[in-house]
Image (cartoon, rainbow, N blue to C red; front, top):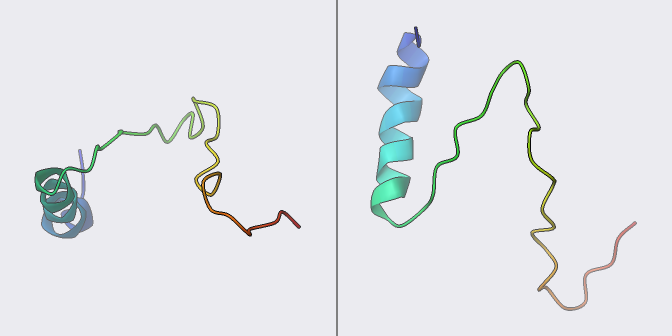
Length: 50
């Protein structure tokens, strides 16, 4: 069961972002990375990897 931080802070923020068109992908504490990582900066020109 979610605690008060989730229900009073995080959930309203998630709902606000969803209303603005964001997609919420619920994660798992047991398996935090169940999908391949995405390169969010791939379309940014001039960025270089260290």
